[in-house]
Length: 304
Image 1 (cartoon, rainbow, N blue to C red):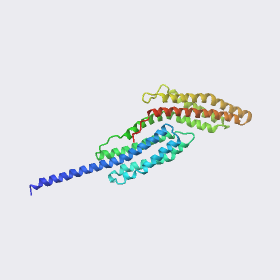
Image 2: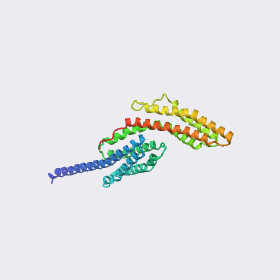
Image 3: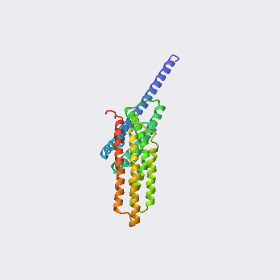
């Protein structure tokens, strides 16, 4: 009996090693399946983000969203056969990608078709970054637990570079959010008899515009290029001139109308709305400059 013991022990050790290797291979394969789905979703989502950042047409944004929906609807075949160990990772992917599709197919399409696009576009791309970051964290935890070797994919590298550009444009846009909100508020006040409230809104707009101009020396670069920052500064200078001169003149005329006619005349209201249309013109010009800047630095999509 004794001569057989080493052989039995060797066989047991061999079977154990084979089992461990098979298990490791299985975990590696499961991870690759999840990564494939995440990367494909990241690819089509980056296409959507490209359109949002460059103020693409509603038609182009809708087409990118349709591709996103189709990609997610066909991803189930890669995830259905995974085991319990992958449940936490898959749950995060399912939850976040479902939210992404709903966010894209609902609020984003509404934003794309609106005449005056608000700050939701930037909120969208920021949320996209958060959703994929959470997926990446869940995948990293799985890879660490089961010792799966990982490497960044081309889709991940593109998405990472894209998010750097998103963070830069988002920083610049923060200074414009309050300005845009106040302009929309003033549009709704044209024709009011509460001139004191209108003057207060105008003063608030001047303060909001002046805030980023006071930080003129703090130049913000992206890849040593400050042209977009300069475009924002020019935008604020133009709005400041409109607010402190043209809009002030319109408000003064409203005040005069109330004294003379006890109402704000149609001619004065028309003049004020024309002044406010110049704000819209300046915003459209800024968006065109921003789109040109962003297109220059958007990372290229991996070849398909």
